[in-house]
Image 1 (cartoon, rainbow over the protein chains, first blue to last red):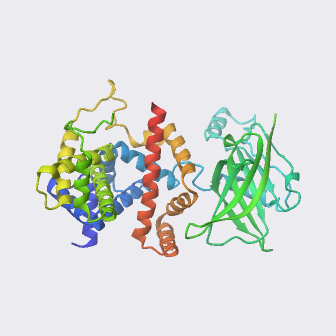
Image 2: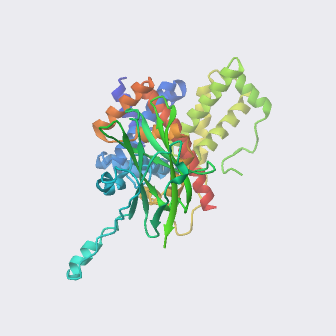
Image 3: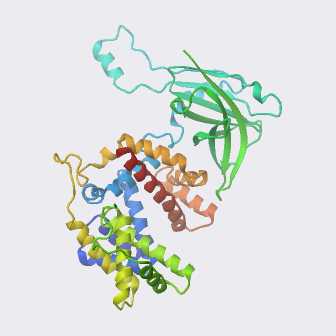
Length: 258
Length: 193
């Protein structure tokens, strides 16, 4: 049997379309040969990803929802893959909110501390009620407070200025400066720790190379995860083999204003 | 008590387990590996057949298999395990399902979107992701990045960098995802208690 027909058969099995005889055959192979088990697992992954991406035919989609999603274990699996694929909002699916302040951040490459609070656009008082209602429909954009942190150097690390965040801000957009180019192929992550070393947040770091040999890492941190305190932000690189390397450390002295 | 343990009321003994391991491998290492492989296969079987909790159904099957080896001649242990698993599945399907009176939260009819948007799932997902080792987290985030042709190219790149086949990469990701899934389910169960 060809691989294509094996995949088709596995898909039919997973969607509950196979006869009992066909199902039994698929399972006998899976019990006897680990490669057959892997093939079904791969077909299952492809099926879920197609569903999440909206690429199933109407018939397959209906089958998937009625048969596959009948199991609570499957529903959790699909929900997790949906979140990992970035279809559901999650702090793990990249730094999309950072785009909202990216342009403003570029103005602060010189370093130091600055801020740019984004607020939802207000509706002009002269707008008609209907227009105002339409404009109010989308959920408000998160209010982002941006700050640029210099890397800790041998001298003066404890002299960092506090980052004073207005109380009604949702996200803290951090810009981390680094003197040397990071590994181009590595995955960059930012970890925020308390001064005693307890990890309180971790997320993807978006890295931009500068022409002068330096680089800037950007990350959005939900402020709900941080209280006013002193933190250490760590820039980590994970290479293709999973090895982790620290590229820089930054002091974040977070304070809130009333 | 787990909802699906010891359906026939008899627990397997240490002697039963030793007998099963002896049938699965010539030494402790190979027997242990084969045991894990058989259990993994059984969990997949119950999972794909929609029987849950799939790990408890798998353990029930292994218990029965271990006991059977005491008084039954079995030539092919894995094939025999498949046969027992099918019996366990039939019994699971006949098992009464406890559901709320109004049926609104019946597990067989709850739509997927309701689970996805469920706040406890979101909280548990974030909590369990944060608890994963950094390298594991980076691996699955990278794996599920992008869409279409870019996604395919990304996975080819990852496999090349890790020096594994694309299927090997998928298996690695699946192991991380399996752990994440298990942790999320446990977290959700704790939240609803």
